[in-house]
Amino acid sequence: MKNYLNFETDIKNLEIELDKLKDPYNQDGLSEVDTSKITDLQNEIDKKLKDVYSNLDAWQTTLVARHEDRPKSKFFIDNLFDEFILLSGDRFYGEDKSVICGFGKFNSKSVLVIGQEKGENLDTRIERNFGMMRPEGYRKTIRLMNLANKFKIPIINFVDTPGAYPGVGAEERGQAEAIAKSIECSMQLTVPTLSIIIGEGGSGGAIALASSSKVLMLENAIYSVISPEGCATILWRDPTKTLEAAKAMKLSAKDLLKLEIIDEIIPEPLGGAHRDKDLILDNVRDAIDRNLSKFLTLNEEEILNQRKNKFLNIGRNKGFSTNSAHQDKLTLKQNLLQNLISNIKLNKKLFISTTSILLLLILLTVIF
Image (cartoon, rainbow, N blue to C red):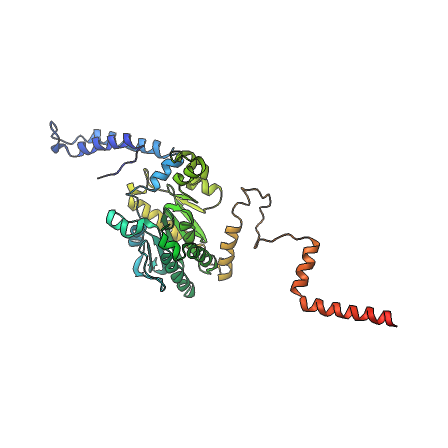
């Protein structure tokens, strides 16, 4: 049974009528298939899908990103990678089933695959904690990212989470520290890393795995610091103002590409990724292959600097700064006195020795 969103009512009615035409023997008064009418109706559905999905607002895009039939990380892992070996545990506390980790082969080359998994039905969603990772999940990914880095194996992340789990137990076990360590680890890797936002990219729970050499997004995915509902509640004290919040946050792939926060948009089939899973698989496979090949000629230092400069330059062209030149590091401007004090602190022993000699010379001059 297909699931429809609230703005797909017309499409739903047309597809119900199409199903009846394709199976006339179960309908009263019909005894043969009307192929011409089926063709016309299919063309009308395609036109309606194109009209609707080419004009989605920010909130409608959010609903598509959360669609329950949308392909999840496990689907991509099962169909894109060969010889996948699942690895579990953080070696500190336990296993977190909201994130799938393991080594596999992509085009006969070893890769580490990390995927936040929401689950396909009620039972698996509860088991996967709806894709909300706990501290042990982030520590598991840190352990495996360091292992992949040691053996020069590229890393591919599938991001799909409403955010990190906000439970008391998670906070007691150091949720914020685990996220921060995951970001730190991601930024220090000397192997190519790709992050693909396939559904929701929510808050620090997403950026912990999206601090990568290349950040890609499916056409109808979202990536934001907070959910539209949460933003509306905080700013307007009204959770119904989700459309205004979604527009203000610029969470769609098109907006984020303009802001240069992401690097590429992966096109989806007409009507969303859930309508043609074979096509979205091909599109994701091509995007991974194309982006990994860009790093074949780079050495470890160049890979590290590329990632560092990518994040340091976010906001410099579209933000308050007018200087858009690439910089290897952020620097703090200091005045002459601050420079003098800094130099004295750095060369404390030399300064004391020089001062002592000057005082001795002055004393000898006074005596003689």
